[in-house]
Length: 494
Ligand SMILES: [Zn+2]
Image (cartoon, rainbow, N blue to C red; front, side, top):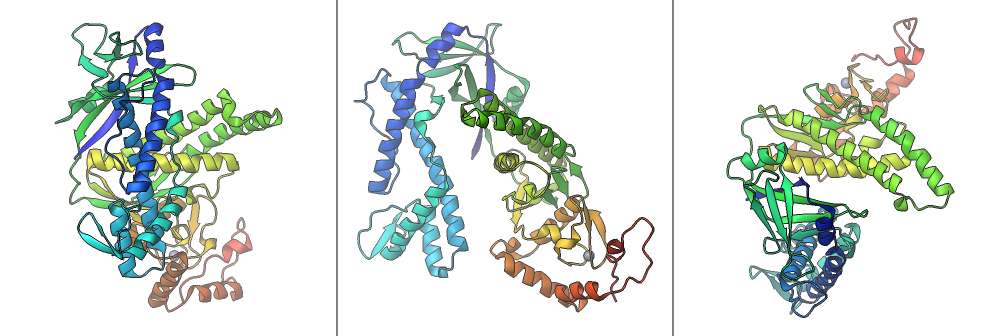
């Protein structure tokens, strides 16, 4: 099992060489589109993604070797899309009310990517192992159809990255001084390749210096819309072994601080302030563009700003998670199932900004947790997020009023005061120790379970606490600065 990471390397090639490489893109894109639609057609008729598509008759200005790279890239992109569909399919089935036997068959079909396997009788054999009733296969098709509408299908005709394998982009180590690597890239002119000099940097070299790392033989070439060409080389490394014997730490995502841990650390404290500053630039720009009837996506300035914001969210996420992963005594992170809707529940940001960082944040967190697992062996358990922000990790009392402000959690039953995000992280940690982390439970069931636990512990239900608060006369005179409502917030356990 290996991990592949790609690194952008600076190139000192002249503009003429870049232009010759960029000239490949339109034909490359057309070929990707063609390979993609052929792969899809084969998938829906045979139920299987082809390993290969014959491009011998395509012509169109690329060599056979170049077409081979195009086809491989299209099939790989499609396979990764099917992987996302598989995840979505699993979520739909897990949440459904189908029988256990039916779910088991569906999960099996899903794992084998056999949603469109041809139905050949009343029972269908998948991968030669199991026989599945035809009606389950029909059901699987319907669910798959639903799943694939939820996963964005990449339009490869618009892809701007060309993944070139070693046959058309040979990577060679350079003995000469002015480059670390030379990539020989075949161009549109047969027999006239260009040599692109690339310069290594620290992160790349560090990666390459890890034990058993090796340089991949392919090169990713990206042509930006303004014609800038960038080159990436990839490094294969073995997957790290899982950390053993360490402790589990709960992690809560917030806005005012990006990340809080159950052992009391707050990471990324300036996060919200920086987002507000970005928002102050984003909103007027979007409004001005819309006033002038310009589509946001067509504005270079707008795209650049959105890109900056995404990069900021990604960098902050990576930085904060790296700090936690640096502690070798931690082996597992307990996180909310990564929905991150909670992350943007408050914060005085515009709707546009909230949507932007929800999407960017979800992607960044997922990617970083995956790479930490592969690179450092730090594992992750997901817990059900409902309603961790309102639950007191001291006594278990759960009520919206516990969360007084964005930062302060004060329990209305036991009076415990804690930083709201750290309290959330502790609740997440506690939940990670429960059976199945309550992932399969709907929100309503969780509240009932919390209420039952609370009653078993204190002899009261949540509703009794609310009623007591409403009928109770304050026993202590309010402190001069505090309001009556605040004095009311100190009921002690009878
Ligand atoms: Zn409490």
